[in-house]
Length: 128
Image (cartoon, rainbow, N blue to C red; front, side):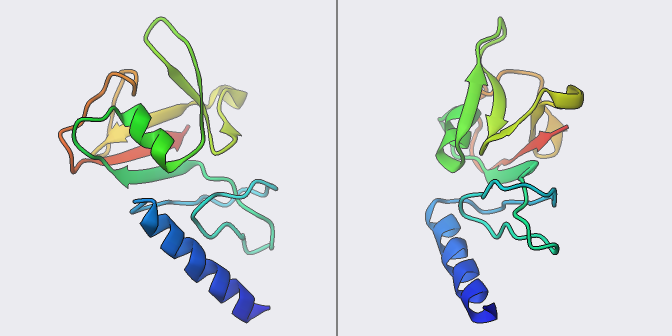
């Protein structure tokens, strides 16, 4: 069983690299939702939900489009532009938690659809 887990972890890591995901941070919360391209098993043996996701931005494409290239994304229309409501099936809104994005560890209060990075910035999405 340990050998299978090691092989599966290696395959997932290679898939993440192939998709261009440079960093994917997992916070352990029991769930039955698998996360594409990352090790998702908690110490209790249950899958974990991603509440934080990071990647290095490319030039010329909106942060929202880049997020969609790294994860499954659900949005809702707002007067400020598209609002991210779920990433990889993990929904915000409960207990006043929402998906926010940071550029080089600075919270951005603008729709990700309208934010065009220069390239090379660290983009972090957090459910908070």
